[in-house]
Image (tube, rainbow, N blue to C red; front, side, top):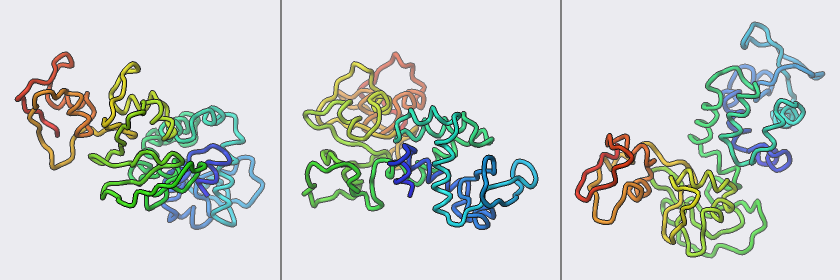
Length: 279
């Protein structure tokens, strides 16, 4: 249902699922069980059944639905039908971060941490895969028209499968962050297009400038890198030819965090033999 709403209305599947999980307590809240209302939508402009429930104030009026699916349908209609949410539909329907902050700014919830809670749920449960048309087992669900079939039967233990129509990159994880390995003809723009995100965001995730080129074999992260390396890597001794940037890419750590961890000024580069803290 969430994927259908994304296709029909342009609302990210991950946002729909995260809001449903948060607002309904994963379907277990009193309101959700009594009214099938999974999005906390109140009674304004509502001619259907109602239920009264203590929320910000006592005995607030909420919409009541016959089926949970009706709640999903009404959620899309609710966002589509109100001018204060109009700017959201100008966003990329896979940009869950922008949608999360946009919903908070538009007044969907009073909780000041609402956007961060949605993003945490999306990233914690990997819900962004539904924005990109990825199934639970990591294989493409064919949201776009396939240009060919993936005949590679060997799957790495860390493989997340190939995404959508292009089937040209295998998505892996490093330090819990998804990445692809650049092929000979790749650019940051072509990889951004493949995964339905902006080139600016891909460059931001990889700590590169707008003018930087892409070399074959390079890791290209399609999610933000972490603040620390994974637990098995506490330090790294710099080898000849390495840079702070290459180390940051190797361990999937944001370069600014690598500098901060080691209390180094940004003007100072990597020195061979120096031991860097990674956590």
